Amino acid sequence: MPSAPPRQCPLCGAAHGERSDHYPGCPLKEKGIPFAEAVKMTQEEAEELLNQ
Image (cartoon, rainbow, N blue to C red; front, top):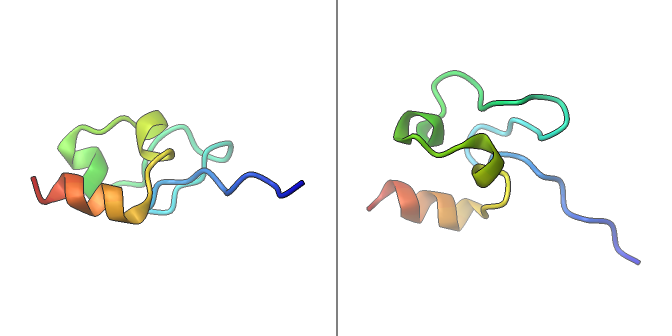
């Protein structure tokens, strides 16, 4: 059975389980996206959200 992909913010790389929030200066944090939501996104989804 394959292991689950690592849950981390696709833009700042903060890993769920090691941190409870984005790293300072993360574009998703500045846009107001909660860390718990960001760790479920792909990099493409995150970049698309930033471009809205």
